Length: 158
Image 1 (tube, helix red, strand yellow):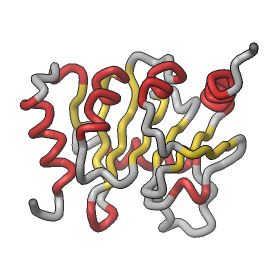
Image 2: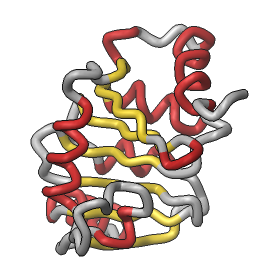
Image 3: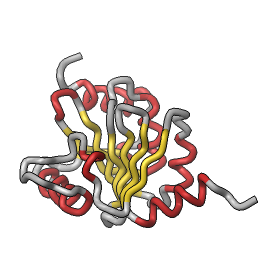
Image 4: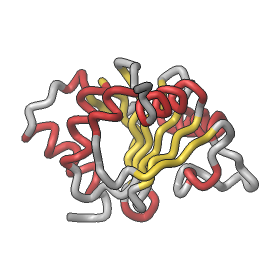
């Protein structure tokens, strides 16, 4: 595959898994820059104007929380993400980011199938929270709503 392997892989999986196009689609080219900028401004601490989402999990604004995600239990994510539609950012080789909009269920069905995905972001369309899985199998959360739901899930009352 070429340098845009994640994007190509996503398109192939949409066809192979027969996913509904309304459940996942690439954000229009005239909108993606503005959306990425809004996401960066809302969730990142930027010490230089060129800093973007590449390794952005190192610079998340408070409140933030990190936890191991080595078990790759995506049912946890299904339980803590309550939004029906979210943003999905897939990081490709050479730090290229692809911005998608879609149904949470569709996106969480797709992510485990992606072989070339190193890091990705899931973001509330209202910019209330951000979730990132990095290449170290760590989950990074920013925003009180998602952190509270994760904490409730991780430490249920006996």
